[in-house]
Image: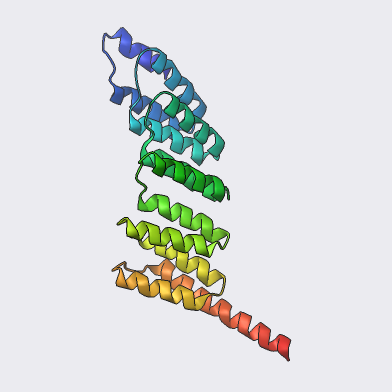
Length: 217
């Protein structure tokens, strides 16, 4: 990659941010995140400033290889350099934190981003809802769902599927069916995952009921 950059300069061309971002994105796609980060630092020293797409690509790359801490650390570096991370970078880290079962840390970052007037998206909320559902923190899940709708962000199919699936797996078929009905009212077309979750939930509920009847005998 250094040789490519050197060749561009030797030919007398002044690379643009798009050119540099493309080169860095290529390293990320190859999974060489370490080299991409080192190369970014190098071009910053040369006086170039990366665009938001490149920064988001690096954050996404770090999270994809499971280095959530590294992504969070780089987010702080971006802020120190007054590079506004934007909602995509924050949402990516929030999602990765939730997948690492670090929901409290994800909620803290969420609060931080909203305090900085970074407006969350349905992706941000869905990640947090999944994280909370994984721990059966239903009161907080409900509050988050209400909050997103109050500010005009409607849950998408994925959001509803997260709720239906988690409730079904816990045998809460009545609640899962209620979410399904809300989904229909919101004109969100259920998919095969929605129906599969509901069916699995009813099967589980029947098994639980049968086990209780057997135990009572």
